[in-house]
Every structure is written in C-alpha cells, then in structure tokens.
Amino acid sequence: MLALVLRLVLLLVPLAAVLFLRFHWAIAAVYLALILRYSAPFAGLIHEAAHRRLFVLRWSALGTFFVEWIVAPSFGTSCAPLGSAARRRGDHSMSCSRSK
Image: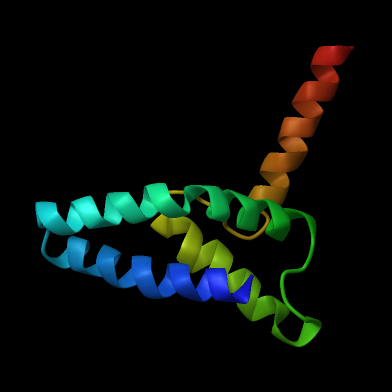
C-alpha cells in the first residue's frame, strides 16, 4: 500500500501542479494516461482505506491524510474525512430503504 500511495503522490501531484500553473496538452495527455493506468489500483486503495487502517497505528493519521487529501483529489474524487464514511452510510441506508 505504501508503495502505491508514494507512487501516486510522486507521479500525479507534480503533474497536477504543472497543469494548474501552466496548462499544456502534452502534459494533460500524460496525466490522463496515468489516471487510466492507476484507476483500478486507486479504487482498491480507496476501498481498503474505507474498511481498514492502511498503515500501522503510529502512521495511520498520516496515511489517511495522504489518501483522502492528496491522492483522491488527484483522481477527481472527494474523500474528505468522514465524507466517505457518511457517503457509505447514505448508500447503505438508501439500499435498505429501497428493500422495504
């Protein structure tokens, strides 16, 4: 998990900053290719982060911070603290209310 988080941070965050400061189509194409390449591992990472602690207790808060505030926005996803948990509760309550 740590290797994936570091890889995503080191690849996507600098490209996102460059695109924000000075947009260029070639950099946008590279960014899109990276997003497509890492979308499946990112989905697994977010799923794991939602259900269990990703790192040892000592580094848990830092790992959660990076996944929710740095990595997720790079993919265009909002995973703010309690946001994903609240969204998950809402999804479960919607599915439970539909079944009644």
